[in-house]
Structures are given as C-alpha cells and as structure tokens.
Image 1 (cartoon, rainbow, N blue to C red):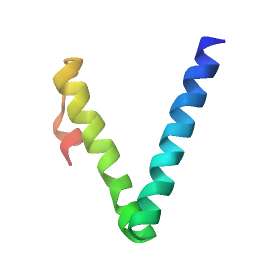
Image 2: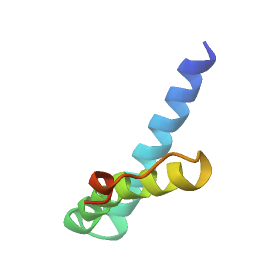
Image 3: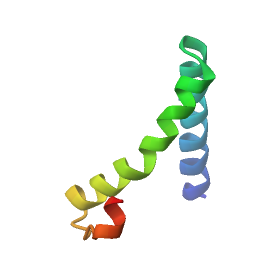
Length: 59
C-alpha cells in the first residue's frame, strides 16, 4: 500500500512540475529538459550510489 502512495506522490509531483514549466515557458523549451534526465541520473548514481560509469555510458 505504501508503494501505491509513493507512486501517486511522485506521479502528481512530476505532472505538476511539467504543467508549471509549460505554463511559464513553451512546450519546446520544456521538452528539451527531458534530454537532461538520463545524464543527470547517471551522474547521481555515480556520485551517490557509487555506480560505475563506462565509456558507453558517457556517449
């Protein structure tokens, strides 16, 4: 049950941020931010969790 509430919190939080960014900017500027998700999570995983970054991960 807890996982369900965590899912709802993250889902509605992300959706609220998405709508806010589209409202203050444009859809094309907001969609450009989606390209930053993968490199950001890779760097966070390397820094916080100690995951290994390979050469293919950086390309």
